Image (tube, rainbow, N blue to C red; front, side, top):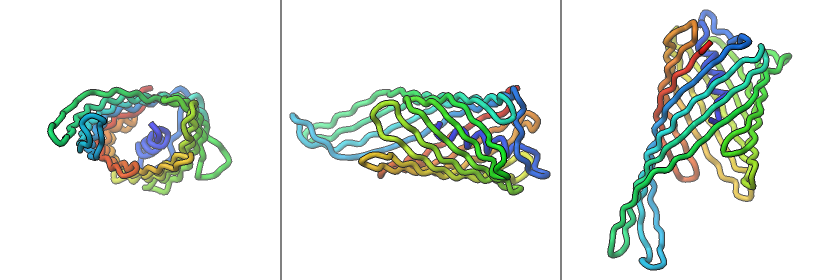
Length: 252
């Protein structure tokens, strides 16, 4: 949910007619939606220790399935509100090898993510058209964001910086993202996003991600789009690959 504003902005821009490519103009009362599903497998290995049985070598395999939904309502030409949710289910399989025994464990983990926020477009900044946002996200935190975008037919460029301030004692997170979209023809476009995140505490923990979307416009007038997603995430020494599908457009 971190790049929700950036994704919706690029998707709306790439759905516009390409002769020439123009910036989308929100109509007051216009409601956009986005639905998605992602699959992310992961395997980790390491060494642990138990007081009774001693050292063991473990291998854990995770199968993650995430559903996502987002809605964006234009209040007028400059203000809009957005709502997003992302439940995730992870199936865990763990094998622990002791000196004299092998133990296999399994289980399910469920988690939730969500966001509710407001965004304002600032005038008088020329072609960059900055957008400021304030959102309440779950797990509970306040997130402040700034998005800049630039259209150079047939390319859309966007940059985002956001700061997430948890409402508990956890460290603040700073996130940076760059994205570009390229229109191949009236139906097909490509979108590439890269991001960096940092935990601003005593221990600065970085993470990075790279996403590629291939977008097919199903219906031009209502901007209905079906996108195939491929993403790489790097957190510490853990590299994770994701595949997904997303459907979005104008509801009314």
